[in-house]
Image 1 (cartoon, rainbow, N blue to C red):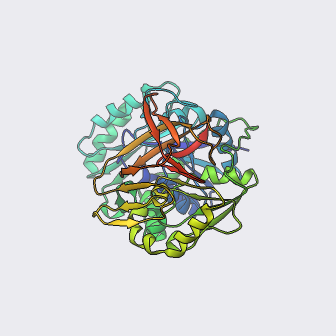
Image 2 (image 1 turned 45 degrees about the vertical axis):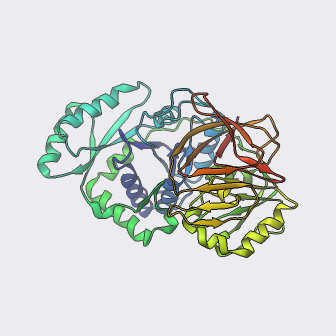
Image 3 (image 1 turned 90 degrees about the vertical axis):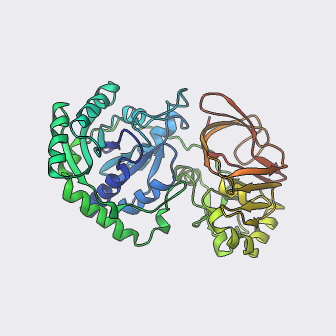
Length: 437
């Protein structure tokens, strides 16, 4: 049986969604409730914290990049052994792209409507009081197929501030199920792509327990649970997503290489593939028994000196590439190149498997959905095939002398030209694949 669900959303980023979600996940887990976390849209960092808080892998749901069958399958598969879904929205509730993708516009509201999940709206009321009611009313009436079921006030300055905001929300006809006071010491550390990764966060369990205590002290957990609604998903959904790049996949996995969507790995395993993790930071190379090596994204720019001097890793990967495919995404792509220059301007010698030089010395944000047509046969599929995904990084390409891998357009269909590269059996790009077309 598929459990009920609820999405926690806000008018914008930085409103306190993650604080509430992590505190709620840990509070429910402490009550022996099997809560299944989900993340709307393309995000790697929040799901890591979700998993640490709830004790269950958190999956992304993305209506622009994922086909309907894959969305339904992910919800159905994730529901096994769960009592409740808690989804965290991305950015503002209704924020998406102008042109629809595989299943929608990429907004969290689209996921809420598709799965029949009500929305718990987090309102940062700093700098306002009764006006919060107008914001809540506007959100409640903006999209008929999305129901705002309740509100949690955040950054409450005083009892008077809370009382005035409550008056506005109550006039909008919405229940308030929590009021979180300002408490800066609960903030999690951040860096340029968002929060510091869960595995890098000092005393993570202690921090999560503090968030749970905070949420339990200022929210009505029972009232929040009562807001969840039955999940709409076909019980027969069974889509495995992207084909495995090989039968035995050597997957780089450590603090420098951690950005791979959980649904990809789960789908590969369901199709019979075996995952063989290795750590470039520990100077490990891919398993000799593997038939493909995959280097996902992450933060290699923070570990450039270490990767440059890890000769066993570099030598092993070069030997592997002589006979078997190697693919890199974003950070992994940069490590496959000749040189990676960090934010301080220090150049680090990488594996040299691609004729690529990248730099963080001059930061430039590259962000958005991507529809990519393969110009070459590779582990992602045959030439002429297409995949959907996302790009998010701050590095610039100083040199790319390889054969282009993709012909890419953005979410609006505008051409971005040829991207990525191929040299022999080695391929890569800044593009993170999410699903096939």
